Amino acid sequence: MIAHETNGRPGQYSDRPDEELITLARLCAHYFGHHAWLEDGAILREVHRLHGIPAVLGQGRLDLSAPLQAAWRLVRNWPSAELVVIDDAGHTGSSAMGEAIGKAITGFEPV
Image 1 (tube, rainbow, N blue to C red):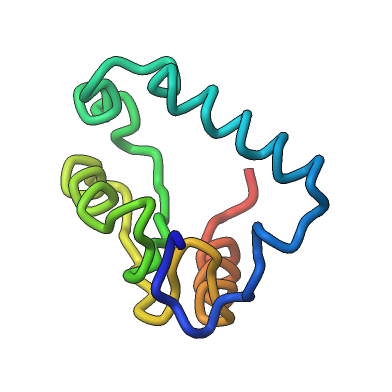
Image 2 (cartoon, rainbow, N blue to C red):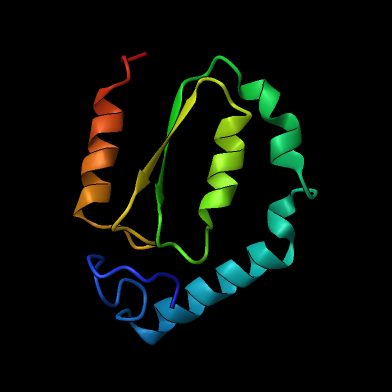
């Protein structure tokens, strides 16, 4: 279980064919095993490179695999970023998460 959400789609990951589940597990293990090819603290240490670039980070409050603290620390050090916390969402999202993503996308000017 990666979330405590009640409004996410059940079986978001587990209702896939065995071959896809094995592929997903291998991919996740590969990235986690290599720490995503990042040194500890690299993102926060280099966040100054993102200053001036606007961003909206959507984070489910009930996500167990990506704790809210990580997103909060990133936004605290990235002045042009905004953190939107979706109370009823976890790792698999919810309709409120979808709405927040849509709102964030429409809030940006086309390049």
